Length: 144
Picture 1: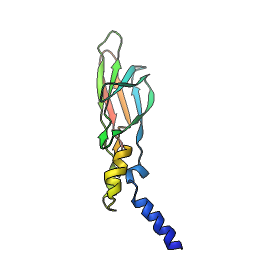
Picture 2: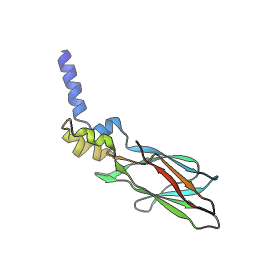
Picture 3: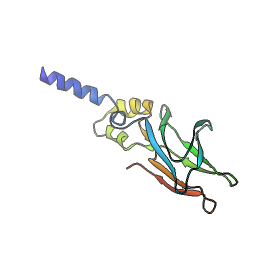
Picture 4: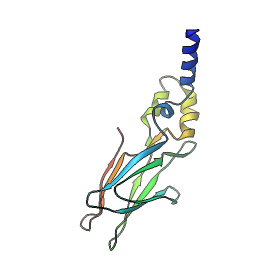
């Protein structure tokens, strides 16, 4: 009986995606400015606005938008009396997705993780300088 329980648990574990179990399909992204508040707009890869806020702000963004399709974002920082600037926020492959390979998890590789968006991850933080002298990206921090 104990073997059946362990066997059933192992079967369930192997038939889910590693990134879905150990990762997530939406990620917190912290957006900050070094010199005070800065307004910004977040648009998805189709140009649709998904967030509008002022720094500092913790956003939760989906990493996938469809089957095997990553969610890329553009952050536009708005500066009164100065030109706006943009930062690309691309999704990258989640390292946990590769954990499906050693256990030969075909369902996780080809179905679960791509369908949930958990096969992708987003940068952890974006730090910008919105001042007149600079106005640029200081840091786009990747997840480790």
